[in-house]
Image (cartoon, rainbow, N blue to C red; front, side):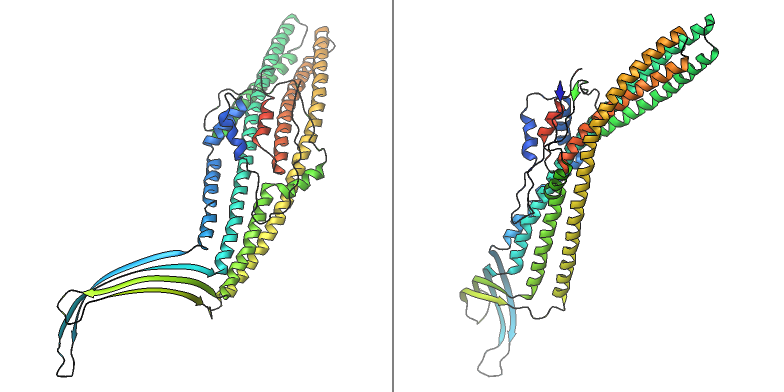
Length: 460
């Protein structure tokens, strides 16, 4: 008998610290490329990795976010600038002294300079570099969350298609059963053992099942298009879930442990934790606007003149300069204080967003945990209800044949059996998906979990 591997609680992590390191899903996602074969759910996931636009956007955002670190580090490194010029000069010099010649001065002047500036004390640049580290951590957390979302979206869309296929198949089977009941009612009426009412009731149920079949076909088409939106191709056939499987509860089977893990380890919380760290460094960066800066400056320059018709002597001038350059801000119109207040307000916002993300993570964990545990209870109840419904249907059919039950009793029993089968099928899918969502809420979902779910697929 196949089993669903229950979600396992990850080890809770502490709050984000300097140089946050998180476990990305990229490593586990890349494993799929090396597999020689894959079941349909894994194939759908690989297709989604290649074709899902949302995941592609997240991948590009990660690539862009990682550039924050070299940009921040660049503010601590020296800068080198160069310039050059060539000037053609023409001027008129007139002297009052009679012995001094007058006339036009025409000459060419050329020059260049190279300047190296090494920051020695720039607190704003250091704060920017620290911000960049947390911005990269935030970008990685966003991408990891997108990878988890891709897993749950693929699984949800995949099982939605299977549920819709099951519904369509059950409606078709119900329609066939009702058609048989309709023919039997007509035969019984012809021989005088049943009334026309039985025929009308069966005909009404048959017409209703025809309408339900059309609605089920439409729903299946929509569900397939929703999966196509993620995987980039239209799914013709999907491997179904095996009928013989047993669902197991989450491990540990304590809701509050999952809630604690979600509040500490979920990627949504890590994202906001990093955002708050960035906001804290922003206050330091803006306050540094009141502080002086000190740079080490080295300059190599050249200036030379010559050519033209002039009595001015040609010359070459080379200059080397090494200096410490101190800059002290005195007054900037109050803009620095205003930016500090703005940064403090943004920190308050980030702190509130972090608290909200923790509460939302806790709520999601509770909902998913209940979805798994209650889903398992519902599956067990529906399995028992299906046995009872099938028994009741057999009894009603027998009673109808011997005349102690009427046609409507058989039709109602048939309706009950098919409704129970449909509800049981959907309950199994929902329970499996909620197990994935529970691990995602705790920040522990990986592609390996999808492999375990995929093992539940196959021919019955």
